[in-house]
Length: 423
Image (tube, rainbow, N blue to C red; front, side):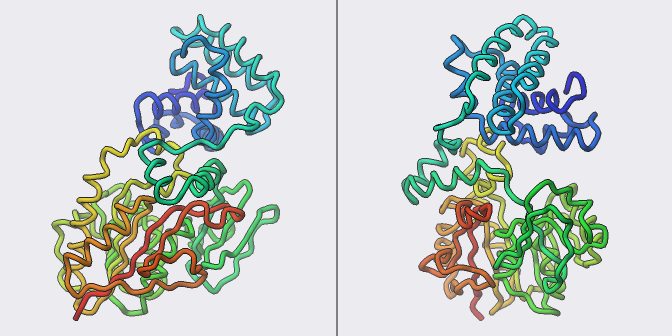
């Protein structure tokens, strides 16, 4: 818990939980940021994310000035000060004094305030502390297979995008509308149909938010529902639906959508967004491996639980809370869900299987295994507005990477396969 209610204190507390306890930021933020007002909490969140994106660089700068690693809270206070100076351009005296004061206030860390002060003042003498340092690398369990598959240059390009603050992508309820955005924002309509905003953005304050004109959704994630290509009146199942961006896309197209997920709290967010946007869907909180529909569906969208390795640009805590040890269990679950989804699909129906993973075990390999298990199942060439030829694999699936559209701010890593059931 933050000691004084400042954004910096809350950021250090959140870093302690992420890096010391392996807790995702989504779980720690409620405790570290709960006592703060909204603007302070937002700043604390931003500071925490920035440190996590540049942790390796900060440690490379600090380590030469230390004979041994200090306690974690002291490390994190110094890391924050270094990142504020090197990335945010904060004046050295302000960043250093805040870190030293944070260390001094702690009962166990107080005696190390002098050390923190001396080390940070040495770092502050360097005008550009991170100059010449490469972007933060992905963990070895993820980086090594990606280098083997994509090459070092591509992996380095992905890491460069992950080090940047991602833009905000929005999906419109009415894709043909042209919103009026506030002045001062960088705004681009992407070829895939999403709107991309850069700059300081408070989503709930944007014109049209209260009226439900849009929702937040990375352009890569939005492509999955577009590839499914639903029509008005179709019965569509959105499996593992929370938080609901794809459900709303399907509903906005006029389909009768059933949204299923086993997380009640996450489905409450979907209910709230459906209410805000005026869209309708049948909400089912259940385990997809056991739930049975009353009738088969015309189309199914399965965004399967996965390693989420394609979302590090938006969730830089992920490399510090996962180690790849759950990959075998995840791929087994994905196979089971694929089989269940096909069983809920009418003969001749279509489905999209997708994951926000960079790993072929959770994408290409899953599709190949499903084709082997289900005779007559076929892959249909994925198609959607803005889908570039280079994003397609030889077998017709789609492989998206964070470094695609790097000059535009990148996108999440995603795998998308459109399958047709025989019948």
